[in-house]
Structures are given as structure tokens and as C-alpha cells.
Length: 235
Image 1 (tube, one colour):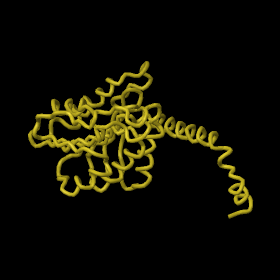
Image 2 (cartoon, one colour):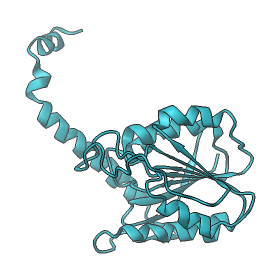
Image 3 (spheres, helix red, strand yellow):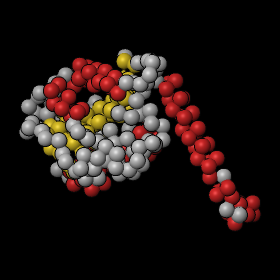
Image 4 (cartoon, one colour):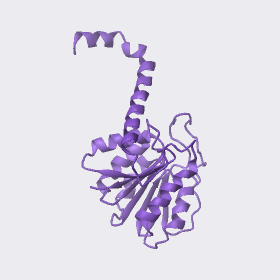
């Protein structure tokens, strides 16, 4: 350690500049996201610069995937962040193949930590899972760190995987991506629901690809100004 660095440590210089450092970190993440956007505008589906934000526009991407990539073929649908099951029910209606399987993961008690302006516990369903009559569906209650390892021990990886990442948080998203990395194969789909959250899902995506350079993906479609973004594994 150089004398200058040692002196800064002794003076607790990091405490004096913590607020500025946090703001600088946010600005750096914004620049990285802006660079990514500039490189990913020429897509078959992209509503970039559409006025305002509309949560329902994410279904433009879901429709695109259903019509162009899934085509009612047998899939393993894994959703991380099921909540009340709105998206899960949407896909159950779209994909009626009897050989498809649907797996949903959630605590059903809200966010396990703060996410931007949303505080821990937001989206709480009192631990109650949505009622699903379809026998193709299995729901797993608990933190992903508690449920995913056990699930993967008996997971049938023979079908195309369609993985919906709707956990919002950096920690949750990165955990899922790194844990399922050994199971990803060419043709699998990754769909992020809050990709434009630059310090959460986007950052988790970037760190995931850096940690697993052998996994390559291509951007397929985007909606709601890059909040909802789909990727296909190509290698």
C-alpha cells in the first residue's frame, strides 16, 4: 500500500465522499446503460422513445416471443417473481402444449430488500400463492436462495427453457442467472421485466455475462423503453 493510500484510509476519506461516490456510481451505471441502448436499437420489436411508461406494453414482447420463438412448443417456463401470477396465467393461456411445464418462484411476502423507492415488503401477498388449477404448474415459496438449488437437482433440462426474470433486485437477479448458468443452452430465452433498472436487473445482466464469457446472447425484442427486454442464448 502506498503512503498516500494509507493516509486516506487513516483519515476515513471514504466517509467524506460517500454521497458523491454513490452519485458517481449511479452516473456510471447510467452511462453503461445508455451505451448498451445505443448498441441495441435495431430490433424486430422495439418501442424506444414511445411517450411515457406503460406497464402493459411489456406484453408486446411476450406476444413476440409467443408468435416467433415459442409457437406452442413444449417449454420449461421458469418465472422468478410470480407475485399474483398475472404473467404466469397469460402464458398458460398462450402455451397449451401438454408437455410444457411451468415453474414459479416467489416469497409471496414482497420484496426482501429495498428497491429504489419501493421499501422492503412492498408487493406483499401475505405469503399466499395464487391458486392455479393447471396441473402443469408447480410453485415454490421462499427466497430463491432457499428453493432453486433443490429444484435444479431434479430439473428436466430437455425442453427449451423460457426464463422470466421479474425479481427486480440486483441480488435476486444475479443469483438466479449465476445458478442457472450451467443449464442454459442454445435457443433458451431470457426475459427481463425491469431491465432498465440500471443498478439492478441491467447491472446483474452485465455482471453475469462478464462472469460467464462462454455464454453468448443476442437481443431479440424490447418494450416500454427497454424495461422489458428479451434475449436468446446463441452459444
